Length: 438
Image 1 (cartoon, rainbow, N blue to C red):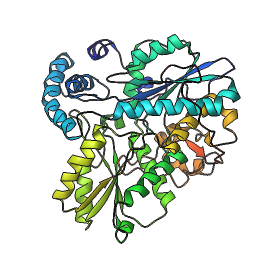
Image 2 (cartoon, rainbow, N blue to C red):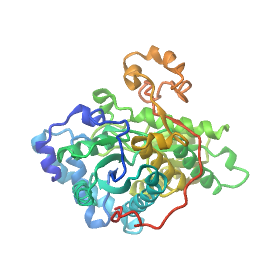
Image 3 (tube, one colour):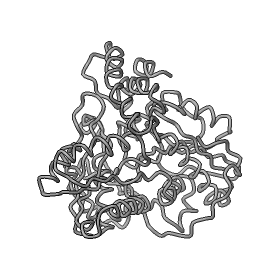
């Protein structure tokens, strides 16, 4: 399905855009099952000549991008803006070596996750786990992933967006496009978010510690941290009760709580594509505020990106660096992406495990529960927060019912336990009968 066909023919469903249309609990997995794990990513151009088609595809997406033009003129507007924005993005490619690292990193993540899933859950369940990369824009496409799943005889499906925070602009758009190709016959479950998984938090803190080592020993204890999140449409806050900003803030709170140090920090969002307003404080404003408070150095942490890409390699490491210099910030560093960090791979494996093998997960990390009533309670009765905070299942968020500084809500996140057991030894890639993960 082309981006234009999607725009013209698909009627958007609120339940799909919010993930509510998908089962989010465990599906039964038995011996002989082939579990397909669909790793959904936004995608990106691999080479400069793919830049304009990539941008046009995104600009035609009515979920992610807001364009203030009548729908009948959207194709022409998308072509115009894609060519206009493409010139700058092509220059970005040239400055980072002429290629985006995203596809390589996601392919490596898929291979590493496939090995971990089969190591940890294959013997216990008797099932085979296969991972499939599915890009919303670009290759490998969702159509390719679905065909590979059919060829491999997949009998159970886990949808795993590669964004830890649920966003209608990203995960919702991917789910709508996936659904537009028709239902998958195999029972399907969705990993909606994993914003406060303890191993994701630990992986981010390891990257922060590595980044702080780039500063002098005398100054690193006072270096402010600026958490940078992907841009998303603000309109989804009111139309879809989008929890994205709350999930981002929950991750940041968890990271800072684990660090337990007196350090200045802030959260900012990249500008979204299109004409919609920024979801929260813009990155440039965050840097200006830190400079106004006397900061002469800053460590930027990409908090909603699981792998390096143009956004991190150029928007943060080049563009934001220039903004920081203009504000008088003399030392500017960006942490490395999580990419195939072992803790991230463990976290993703456990996210899948809780959705297919909860009994196996009982002895290790994983999803314990969600607050009774979940987001609906927070949305309709904020006063119920005290009751939920006293519930035994509502771990980690009793203090987490802090109003989000972006939307002034308190949307809960999944509750995870941290009872780490021994990690299995890796086995040779390809020994489980799956084709290449990507």
